[in-house]
Image (tube, rainbow, N blue to C red):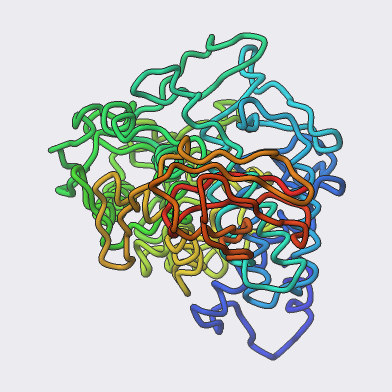
Length: 524
């Protein structure tokens, strides 16, 4: 971007300007600018995403890795492959390194911490008592792992192996353990401080994806009542209030009578497609679109009379912020906490909800202000026309949603990948969701896993499977991690010998009569 501006200044008489670009060209440029955070400035060892990047000091905090931000980074790598910004082989190699690092990094009952050290994978405490698992950050990462699996599962050998790695990592999260046996999920657990953080995850905020993944987990699912009683508060999540004559739909935590920061309409919906999605409590397209419209209308009405706010300069969300002395701090910007700060990710990541309003802001950044708010890695994290202020800094969790949500606007890529995952379709169905855009399947009647016993397990060559008499005559199938059938046979008696010597080493699943319940086996 900087080189381009310098170059244009030397082209005399050509009358070139940003305004000559089409919407598609500007969106493409923005995606490439945002990608730099996750490609050019990825951590050199882990290939994961740094928590923050400061343009004035690129080495600052360079080994602090953001778990959720790394998940967003994975989606940026996929869209870079899809759009030809990088080669497929480059992207696959990058993701292999990242997933291998995650496999050896600190985990706490399957959940990763908020921050990891980029060279070692050791937890970096986020706060005094937050030095263990962070279930919401883990959910943001897991959403992306499922997209990796779905994108690469039918590829070449290296791509299929990558898909298997992603699947194994997502399957390893012990979502049900984070309930403490209650009808609610807890955000944190630490081996040093146990449940001292004591933060229940209840709606509405950014964490819807956490409950959907927990219900959908193949190996560690929560009961659906945890969603209904915990997340939905037994129905109290629903709001009848409006702002600017626009219905809120849900009660937003900490925002009585208004809405929370706009990232709540982004994080869970990178993969979850809200179009035509509905359950007992909401139409989710209305929820996210209304949220965005309220934030936009707040800038138009401008009750605090901040200079520069307009229909084309808008967007409140959590980001870097301006302290009263002009230095850089951090704040969750929303209508009831409007500090005169515009966070570019808010409007840009909302283009799929408000196309023209978001395009107007995109042109404001790249054309109207002649790139004054554009830096090395795209739009800066926070700006303020009112205070004639900007911070030349970036955050992974802000920059990371821009490209993927633009891709959903362009092609619905991540919505289709995520909603195509069989466990997601079944999980949504079990919660009573319906969708006009995707088929949500009913879970199959499972064969109780304790009716099947397999010895030895792990095994190198031959398994012996014990089944009840009622299963004699049925067929069994063995699947690999990509749900492909690799071996089949008939159950001849209550004990059946199965030769697995021809299978490569790895994790497999055996099931009877193609039913959903699968017994995990390990080939040595």
